[in-house]
Image 1 (spheres, rainbow, N blue to C red):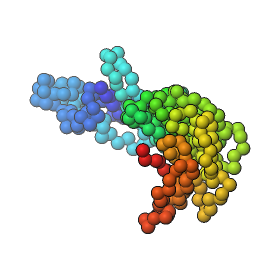
Image 2: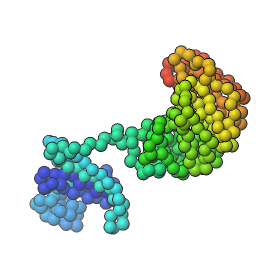
Image 3: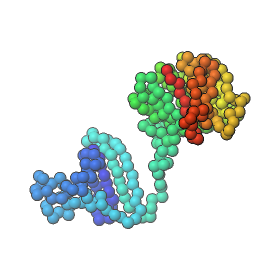
Image 4: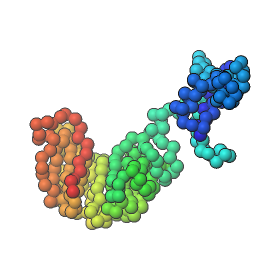
Length: 303
């Protein structure tokens, strides 16, 4: 059930347009079937009881109303006493304009997700992880988690104050948990993800911008923008770019471990790939004929 309530200067303060169907169907009937239908039985507008009733075409008039001033609106979704779930949109002329303005852009930057819960979408997405059973999770810079494809929610940082923006996410091997990492190296664990330590509160040469879990889920690597690598749990250190300047104004943008966890790849913003441990070099965009001067942002390993 959907309810539209359009404000109207011709009908007092507001005019109700109520529908038991979807908005597209409702607007069609309000625009083209709102008048006298030849008999009461054939008239869909309950306020149009005779051909000359003042209520005829009232819904259409509410839709086409042009206030010539500032409009404010509100929306809500919830159950009514009849047991149906209802949506309500209220549009009203306000003079002077209402003092509170909440834009769609503001919502995207700070979704009104209940504290610690997941949501259908996030603001600025900064990372994603796959759920082995299908679907996955997307994380926003504020620590919000959006579930995709039926992946379960194990919690989020929504509504919480964090010291630095979130920059990455890694899932546990069984898909029953995940870690989030912030740019200051802080690590947050959810579900069956175990906390093995972090760089939070420790001095960093460059901010952390990603992480990866070990194959057994008993450790993880963090990577900084200068290519520095930090290991926790059973994650093994196989080398880094921390002491080797990347050069050409580039920075490390992504990290991916090999499937056996005995090596890893680092990708920089110019599309160059660096290998460590048992990671094999197969080429990279920077050394190919099709190289483009864009920022290369992600790398992953095939099975």
